[in-house]
Image (tube, rainbow, N blue to C red; front, side, top):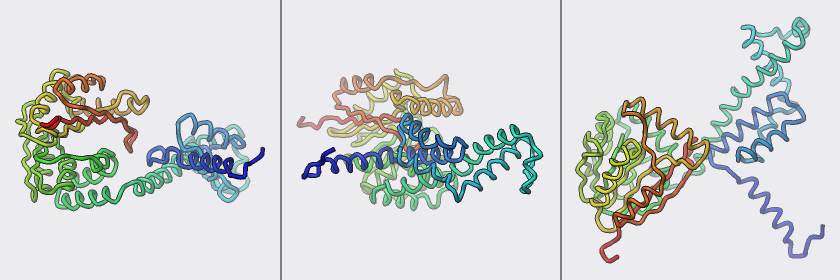
Length: 366
């Protein structure tokens, strides 16, 4: 193949390599690629490991170079340890004891029994080795993925919750690390004027609003009195007004921003329409309404999101189950209230899929 003087062919090759190396390098998919590669490297399918790794990574939409690189855990240095470890774990699982390391010990067992123990043990060992490696990859990429502003917010919210109980403090710490909604809200224009969080929980989202504008008046409500107490304590230095109330009856003040994060689906369709209508009426001209719902259009990620939603719904004893409506229904409802709406779908850092609705009330001059 002739390569031109202008170097077009090498440039295209570099672009292809760049795309392969950077595909699906978000923390979650990258961790899954590392775990898959290590598992295929340990399971004894010698000669097929690379082919199977590339095929499965392509099928699952994972980073192929990273998956392939992880299979090299099976190398001449580590292979004896992997074989012995697999055999020992497999024999422990099937017989309740380890195999003697003497050279003659394996000869005392039938060959088929040793192969079965080896295969079973390799699966167990792949989970033992792959799990920590995947967590390390996730932590490294999650740390690198955050912007300086997001890191500043996390430091600010951790400081505010230092005196909170261990559960509230730990929940907020991990919530702000794992949920991408916080990074997205930091990049948004959150307007001005009073801010309301319906279903405020422990107050992490209100803390984000205060981080962006410490002088804002904050309102919030939640059904869990312990969460409201934790949020009130953490945000006590701010102009904050929180109450243990139902979002359906909470008196909405005039506001420049209203947030409803992972709450709307717990109301029936009529209650959802009523609440969104009240929000549209309470917003000042130019105000923003931002709410999040599970995204039903993301395949397996949607299944896990809805399963978790139904599990939480059942544990809370709130009725028969969450009420989901297509995004078009919410867009139509808000458009009838005179608001413009943008819907953005995204995959969270956990295996969850969400759709965020960004609605804006026209300014007076519009």
